[in-house]
Image 1 (cartoon, helix red, strand yellow):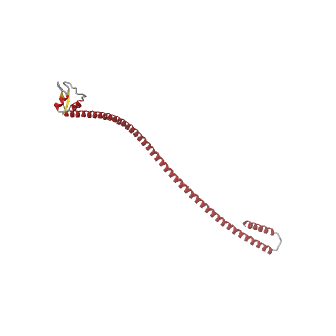
Image 2 (cartoon, one colour):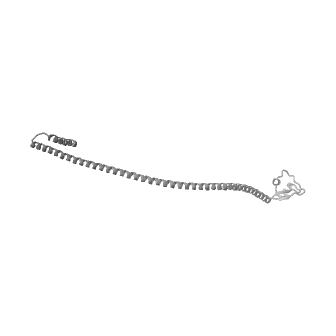
Image 3 (cartoon, helix red, strand yellow):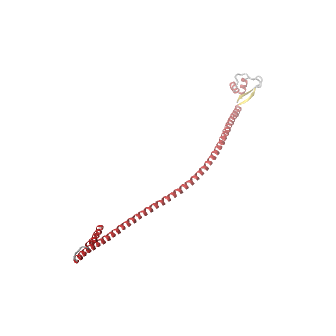
Length: 220
């Protein structure tokens, strides 16, 4: 539309220059000139109005562009701030992870050292226990031998006690008689008021044969 008005003004200017050489009355020329000037003035006013409108529109557009640029800049700034915050958080987390890893490595080294110490103590303890076990086994063997000897001694003691008891029992149940000349079991039995069989049994005799000087056990 602006181009059309500019083109119209140019045509009017050409018309003025073209009409001036024509022969006409001064009144007509003046009237024609006034009409042309009026139209030219009108077109100029319209052109000024259009230019002002164009400037206004451009200002509005510039404002919108500026607003868009500001909004874009704000979005960029917000996005950058968010990214910066994320980077700071990640850096903080990374630092915390490094500290935790370092602490874990320290604890792991300490645990390995403690484990090595405990392992050495365990080996020493195992060796000591093995030595004590060997000594205990030796002591058990010695004790078993002593127990066996004690059992043998106890058996011997029991046997001796039985013998002593038997001797005491036998000695308290009989008297010793020394066979004389012309003695016989029957005669000895009558003298001591016992039976021949009891004398034979006590002395393990199979028959009635006895000799002078033989010692016989006579039941009481």
